[in-house]
Length: 83
Image 1: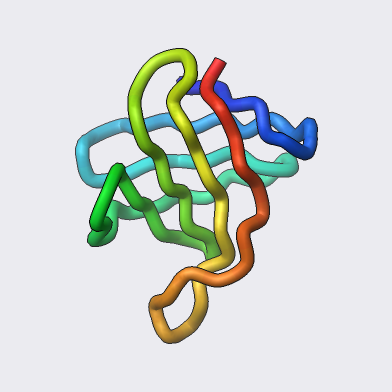
Image 2 (image 1 turned 45 degrees about the horizontal axis):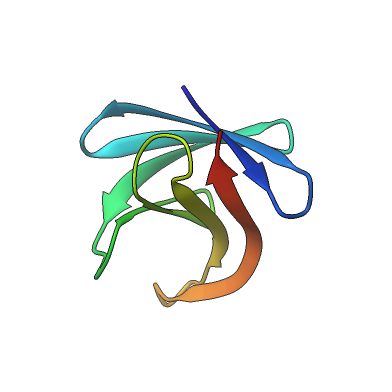
């Protein structure tokens, strides 16, 4: 389990059971996600959200974004750093 602290003070936990999926826990909800195309870093999509990560270990960056119906990224919900 990877733990992130967000600029808003919110905590996000993310698990990566295999190279193609992630489970993101955000605001007492769990979102199963599948890997998606990304120009940089890793991008996971599911439950109307996107979870983007860049880097690994402490200091890695994470960003939670609304996923639009047309497949594009929408509003940024959280910007986070791994602890």
